[in-house]
Amino acid sequence: MWYNTKTVYKHTGVYSLKKDIFEKLKGGLIVSCQALEDEPLQSSYIMSRMAYAAFEGGAKGIRANSVQDIAEIKKTVDLPVIGIIKKVYPGSDVYITPTMSEVDALCSSGADIIAVDATARPRPGGVSFEEFFRKVREKYPDQLFMADTSCFEEGKEAARLGIDFVGTTMSGYTPYTKGRSLPDFELMERYVTELDCPVIAEGGIWTPEQLRTAMNIGVFAAVVGTAITRPRDITKRFVKAIEVE
Image 1: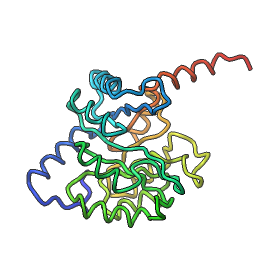
Image 2 (image 1 turned 90 degrees about the horizontal axis):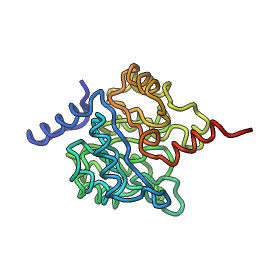
Image 3 (image 1 turned 90 degrees about the vertical axis):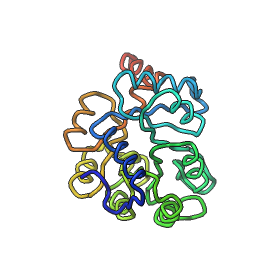
Image 4 (image 1 turned 30 degrees about the vertical axis):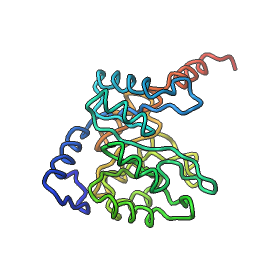
């Protein structure tokens, strides 16, 4: 069963809504439609059209950054949205939904799932993930959450705390996982084998073959971003292939 047994749904209506989101995403491709301020396609309108193109291509969900982008995307496509807010705070390396302020904003935006950095790195103010998420879950008991993790211990801890989905998003992006081969199929397999929690493969999936490998491992769903929605990075990859060394 793909529902985290530690999450209690208090109302029948809430349970039905969450079950619907799970069923829509199960076994599917989630396309990350994001563009940061320094990127050419940075625009909520453009991200909404990216999401529509992904929808027409068969995507089962969208991952999006910022309240503005989420609002435009939800007006454009009827797909579950994983929402994040990327914000840098002094003294902390955690930047994906790092504080309660970003969680509040995402809950108000209507994001179906909220993804949070669940690494062992201190959050702003020196707060641990456990301390942060316990307060988040207490405040928003009916909201679905995804843990962006980098290693098995982080995923295990997030599952223990009652997270709804565990993702491999941060593998290779923390000091203690730097250099790991991406996509991190080894981490996916450990999560699928050892955790009682739906696993979302994310990070470094560039080809359909890699996506198929992830799905064959048994992940619940998979996120692909750069390889689909970032033409600048895609172009660089092709140019690098023909550069004279």
